[in-house]
Image (cartoon, rainbow, N blue to C red; front, side, top):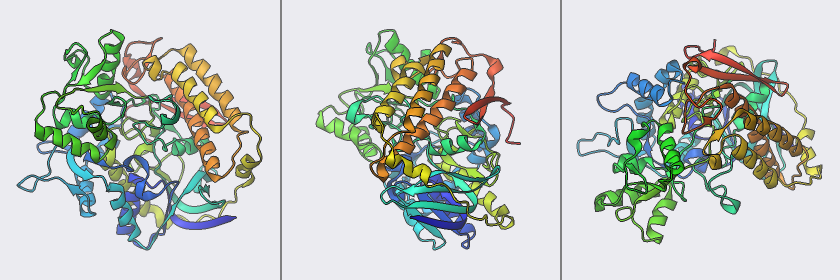
Length: 547
């Protein structure tokens, strides 16, 4: 059974960017016909599924959007698009007001001002942020939400995106979407590398395990230009629970110390990647484990931590309680995670112009899949969604509704008839192990050389061929097969990007052992276009825009 839809705007992904875009499009023009397609349920999907306790992109008192640009460029060691950062930063406080209007509780002091956590953050009660966004979207009659529907690929007319096709996750229904304009607002890519935990706990990771790089993969297959995949993101997290550390560092001023009690961070620098590199290096030199020093914090600070982690990472609060090791009495051990590809923290993603339009006509990108603009976090995703909404409405009336393009459902149904010697999980672990060992994963302290990358490329290509014969017992299996294949597609392009940047720019995120130092001739962007399964690297100036 195939269901067909024709809409003005197709939004793929019901996360922060996708839902906010639907809200702003509807507020700007209530006649706009919109469909939001989400493979889970928009009420609890994506990065914000379990909540968040701060808005980490905000312009605090005494600072300007230009200050935020400088912070983000410095943290990215220069590899970022200033034009994208500025257009985002100029809207951060504006979209904060909008999400507060929609019902998000933002903490305020006795004078009614937001409670800042450093000049770029404000504290919130954000456990229900996705519920708030979902409820806001559902109030608009022009918006239809399709939950539990996985988009498999774009539908193309030449270099123009005219819709997409997909399938139900719970029911054997195939979907054909024709759209004037498409917004890709899916998440980044997790699960490419072997994670901190193994076996049945391997999905206990920092980033959403269900963000598989689907949006990236669709763009790669369609020939969109992509940027900066080699700027992987490695999160510094509380060991075992993989809970965020920012609340400890910024909320109670917990500094990093090693097993000797030494405050070592001053020896490494304080950008995001340098903080991870510090932990990796201390371990290498035999001074592990590393901690955030919390011993001696006040009872009030401890209560703040217990409450704060319940808003975003309950496992950490539960660990403190069940082990009877409260942070005031025991320091919190920290570690790095496996690498992720995330345009919301680093600059990986689609190559876009200031309107967030991609190199494919009528396709926009916002949030984690939009490249060039790091340090977005939640409000940055909102800002990009609003930019896209305004840009779409400027041209929507001039675009004709495309005729539906039929797709071959046999390419999806074949997996039900396949007979494979391998399971989906076995190939997933094979992919993760290959990337970990040969492409700078966690067990290798994020280090690699070109010979290892070449071997990784061969192994990933072999696994990709094996994935063509995987068997699906039901629609959920079909989803898992597509998630694996999406990760494999992203992994292939990532390897080519790692090979192309012949320097070590972000030592905590990646160390190229053939080129262990920073090289200023690589003060440029590594982009790529994939055609016919072959990835071509394009080097662009930091001042280039899409055109």
